[in-house]
Length: 134
Image (tube, rainbow, N blue to C red; front, side, top):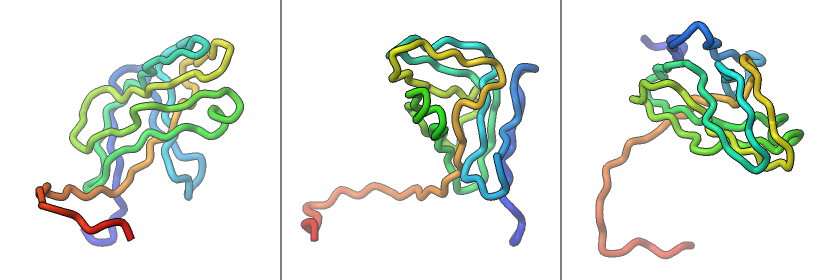
């Protein structure tokens, strides 16, 4: 209905899951938390499970973004950060450890942000040429 706020719906797939939360009313993203303990080896990567299933607001896709503190202080970055609107599996977050020491993630640690972004779904059309860059 007009005027209604969009809603991010979610299901906890296990008792280990944590609800997405916002750090403030105007925070761009929802904090995602790890459902399990992990160790990401130095210069390694790991798929961190949230045990959440989500239903994004109409007209949006989910962008998994790094947390600035993890990136700056611990050299932890996010990879493969797109959640399609029709994806209904367990939300996993690919984390890369660019540091020289192993990084420990504990159950409940904030690992990334989920940002709901508007998206267009254009059709595709092949053409003979496209205007040059201006």
